[in-house]
Amino acid sequence: MTTKTTEGGVKVRDGRSTREAILEAATRLIHVHGYNHTALDDVLRESGVGKGNFYYHFKSKEELGYAILDQMITSFLERTLEPCFSDPAGRALAQIRCFFDRVLESQRERNCVGGCPLGNMVLELSDVHEGFRARLASVFSTWRERLTLVLRRAQSGGEVSAACRPEAVADFLVASLEGAILLTKLTKDIAVMEQCVVEMKRYLSLFEPRI
Image: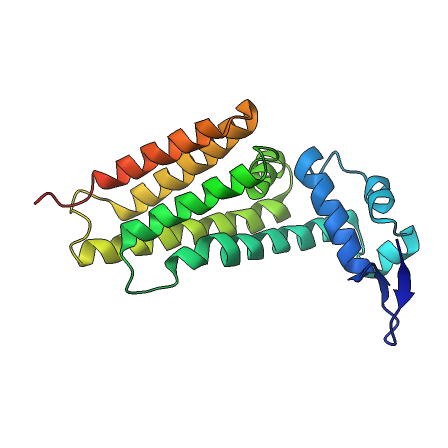
């Protein structure tokens, strides 16, 4: 590992700043071991950063955890959720199916290891840490609201039947997708995720108007 200091005094390791090195190392560890089972010493060892440098960038492990969660949320929204819904004139059900496919490919690329980073944090921290719970609730709310709005628009345009209850369907889809990711993580079998995505798409098709 090569280290140099820029004119602004920021240390860079192999093209990464010290802060980035800490965040990358901690994210990898937390994704596999969880927040509570990732010790600060583990992060320092994995990142190659000294304790003094760590506390220059983060006041505590909690502050580091919030920064990681913010990155996870941004990544989910910008890389997974929003790309499928960027065209306001796009067909709603096709956009939702696109989103399912992106989540499926994400699990395939990870070889079914790690599950959903946000879902993992929900399971681990939402009962014991209000700060994390509130942040996680916000992103899941954004996800549900996005699906709800798309379904309402589709219903208004006649693409989805009156039998569809947008809010209830959105909640069901989020819960189903998170459950599918969890089961895929447990079985280490991408076929489980593929099958669940097929069934969720079939569920959506029930709301397509019959000609």
